[in-house]
Image (tube, rainbow, N blue to C red; front, side, top):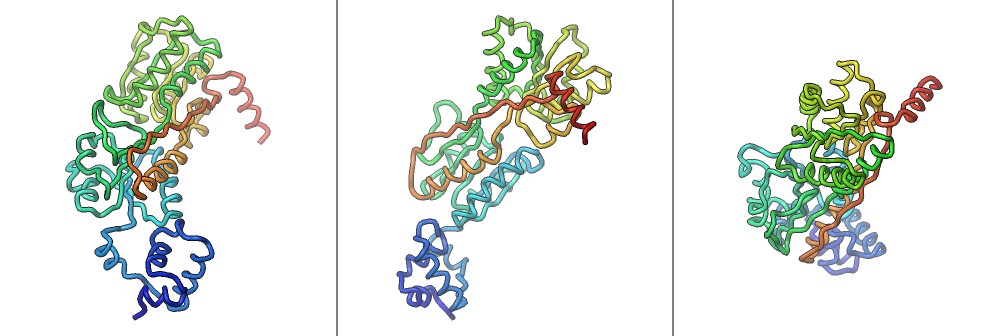
Length: 345
């Protein structure tokens, strides 16, 4: 049976260099990497993965721990993690939350089946993450932060600038002449929703809008949740000119209810979301939103995890910018343009 020593001898390199080519090829020069690969192919060498893992206690696998696997946010994010992970020689494993976390996603950490983890699941509490994080199992919390007062040299974070996004949303709506607003928030304990509301209200206050009079209806970040919240708003006497929903899925639910009630968008009321999921551009009218860099978040998270896996500790958190994407749901001119383009096509 061909061994790694045979490959090293034929390629005229050390055994450790062959191991690097197999596990972390980015750390080896291109010329050396090609020479080792040629030797592997010539000898038809196949590494014994199980034996290797037992020797070095490495799996070359990283986990992505999500609350669920169904949201439209996740596909682009996972793609970013997977592409960078593959380039770095890692396999990625996405896992959803189970009712009993020790039997679900956290089992991967508990049993040492991964080398590191990227955690987006908000139901995994910070003390639990602190329990698992260590030099041999670094963790990147994605789009969240640890609870106040808690920190670890082996946990870092990557996220979007949610507060800035809320501020941009308000600035856009104000620029269109709207002065009476309503906000459809996420769950009461959602940090993302809170930050988006904070930025939104800050811009309104700068424009001398009384935010104490702005209705806030909490929901659950889903289309049905947005529909329920919109029906609640319709029962109130507040004549909102513009509605900002804390994510696109809820905003799309808002559009559905307004269509049922034959309320013109944006003629009677403008609607704006947050995230810029793919569906946002295809609903009628196309949804104005704040673009959250989903793919880039995955890329940044994997790069942060690689730094930790290479031995770095106390890695500073990284915050990615968001941007305004105005569409026809808030702007009459864009609605007319969208109509004209559909006639041309």
